[in-house]
Figure 1 (cartoon, helix red, strand yellow):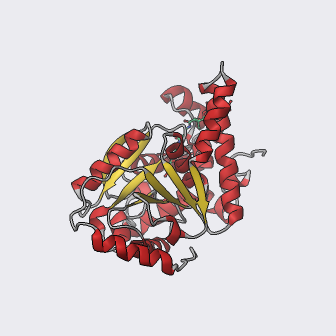
Figure 2 (cartoon, helix red, strand yellow; figure 1 turned 90 degrees about the vertical axis):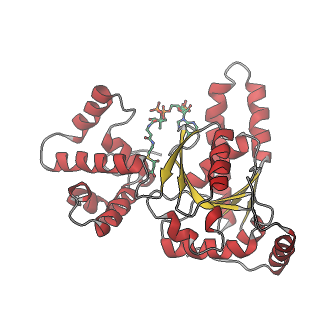
Length: 318
Ligand code: CAA
């Protein structure tokens, strides 16, 4: 459970800001960003925001998690500069130092949002926890602050309903690995204001990403196509119509995909794919695209979750 911290100081500051702010919130130019969740996605978002000159606060429950996230950011940055500054390693080191200076960490979400223009949540995929978090931060953040979720499959409107600012809530769906993947899905609910959408679109462009606009529908654009594709690859294999290696080679060499569906499933996380498909099947039990896979269920129940657990469809070393 995401712990909610109380802070009288933060609450007081928020009340003052509220009483002075206009009731009409115009376009927000996003400079100060708070990322809640220091996992792979949260750390990746923090990295690209800090790399493009934003002031970033990364929040998670413990200092240990945050230390690990900062270490991950640093090693990803080293990979980035190895390419970007290949003939000037000193400038690469300076770049890393500057980027790291743009990121601070905090275990207190209330304190972390007091001067935030944008909050991006990248925490566990559990609606109740996300609603509790958004409801709590709504009382702590300035009036102009936009709340965004990086959820891959849950309705943004349900999270927004826990706040008093549904017009300033939307989705920002990034892709793994965040520093490499150029796309961000910018999700508008029926309550998201045009100003909020525009601010989010401008923010993604400032990150050097390409945004696409999506409605708040299950899977948005990419996962709605990608997850059924990965599930069908699994079912094809279960029917005995191809080995996972051949299916992967087939899609890489025959369709030009950078990873085959089994490699990609391991990369995304088998628990994530199961979670998304199970959720969709609950809503549309007869849709054959969302049919379960015994093999996927078995691997997840054995804790074989893909690359992160060093075993999924394939085995990995550290
Ligand atoms: N940080 C920084 N640089 C990275 C990186 C990272 N995390 N990952 C890869 N790179 C860069 C590095 O420069 C790396 O070179 P080094 O290994 O020398 O550092 C270079 O990319 C090449 O990487 P790899 O040799 O590991 O392999 P690759 O050429 O296949 O590229 C890849 C890796 C970018 C991940 C590529 O395979 C790819 O695009 N795969 C598809 C990923 C994809 O589809 N992601 C979306 C998943 S769906 C999702 O995220 C949504 C959801 O909600 C589930």
